[in-house]
Image (cartoon, rainbow, N blue to C red; front, side, top):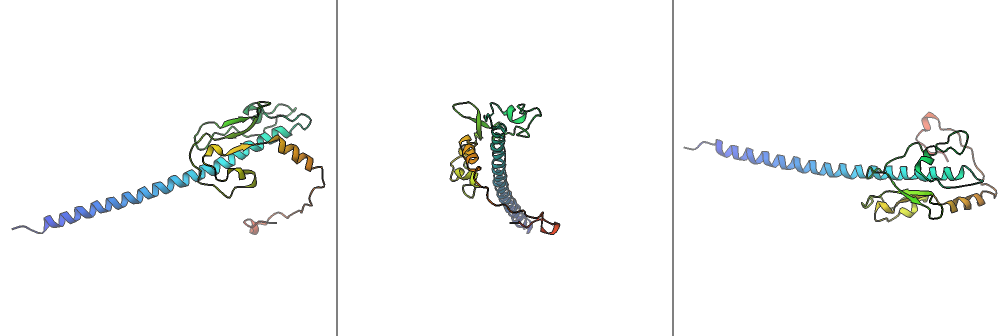
Length: 186
């Protein structure tokens, strides 16, 4: 006569299979979430590093107001020997955080100087709005390659022309105290 054990072992086997399936689905969801978060962090890194390149090119260009010129290579940004003391406009030559390869250089047609950089990554950016004013052109970009971090010498000349006018009044704001570290002073 059959005992109750074969039916019980069948239910246990089904329970273990369902448990493994649930754990698998949970791990898949966690992996997707981690991948998305990782990509968002790399996007933020790209925005930061691209802006560092743009600022370095601007700094190099504005160092000698009598003869402003764009750098010919990234080495010029790392070690500018136009002054008696070496000037470092860029701390290091960063790699593209999305691809791990060097950035693609944007050269100005007339001088062949470096005017900017961009990522050769082809993926669609998560961020498509809410950019800072200097990055407003990145809005609704279809790929990361459309995020061009360019310094325009024409805008520097225009800014220099407007600086001859009376500067806006500035307010001195006190340094934040320890209790106000998270509050923004205006």
